[in-house]
Image (cartoon, rainbow, N blue to C red):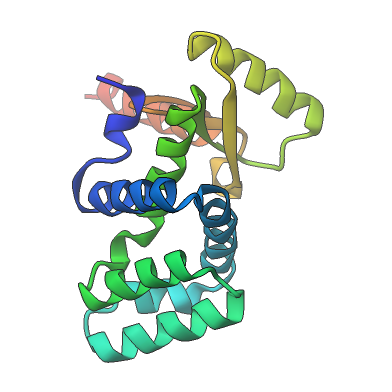
Length: 188
């Protein structure tokens, strides 16, 4: 089983695979990758958009319209626009972020690379990112690793790394939670 299987499972995986296959057929993989980054940025900076994607009370027609406006605002390419329109029409937009991540994982796998999601309490310096990338590359059997970096101050410190089905949680938050749990068990 490949590392990508866990990422592209379920509904999101089917949409990721369809977008990947179409991008290969049309030679638009790099264009879709750029559109993916624009979409991920829009989702990261617009909480209202994220809520709308997950709101079942918004009609299909309205969501198709929202996706058309988003496509225009971000100047997305036709393949990406059709993809968003289809997801809106089929009411699959709650799976959009996972489908976009699955698409990127499929591209990386095709290139013989690996993708890792790295969440840190504070932004990583370039030196830290390089050192982490080298370590992750060893874990991935020498393949080049593309890191999707996020910052979550609630981690307090440390990192959470997910690469395929492997997850490493070295955050202070999880260590404190484990300590709290073990203290509860001792007190019984």
